[in-house]
Image (cartoon, rainbow, N blue to C red; front, side, top):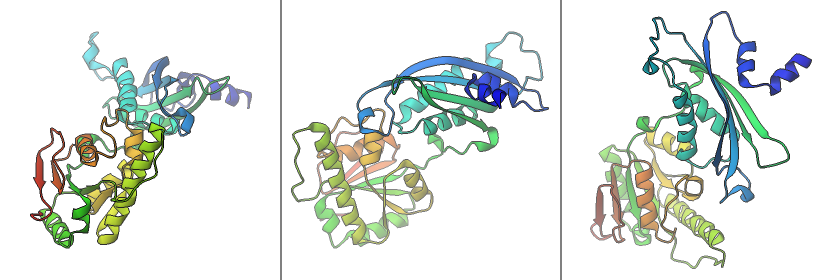
Length: 303
């Protein structure tokens, strides 16, 4: 029992050695790598950064030929730190467990990597370090990579477009085109509660957009409201017409939109860039600034 307790708090390199099997593997390690990031599920952790400490061990299959002192032939330490930086930049996360999982999975995409031990600790949330440690093998890699995601058509609907009698016909046409479809809406034509505190007002406005998303979903049963990347990926792969509820993705974005939620076409354009949409269609509103291929139509003209 004493040995088990010691190993539980030992560096992951000792854990890797203790868990070694008959198939001998080499190991590379990263010790005490500290970065600052915004992470956490509590409101007090939003809008501020905290220190995270990473300790990582990667078990790699030995090369069958001589290394010849060639850095290009080995799994570089840079790949480990790049995996950490990439996942921290991808989106704001609530849980250390999620971060550790994604770092491990990204490392295990490297051909030589066989198993990864990842420990992540928060250094500023208490008198000690609070953390998690996970172990993942190559067979555990399930994370969807951005290049594997489909490129949807995003259609922004003004309030007049949501109420238009032609809406079901537009959806028929979008379905017939075969590309994944994601619908975006803005705030409804009713007064939302007001707050003098900007972050609070931002959340109120985002929730107002989500209420309007459910109004749209009520107009046609094919419209499915989605709030997370996972729901969105599933919806696109299974041919659903998704309606974006923006709060979680906007608030969790590592580099969030500069536009405010009340500029909802601009918010839709930001999201189109985030998910690499093939086209942005605006119905019933003015064109936002965007690098995505753009089509603007009136409610009268429709799709």
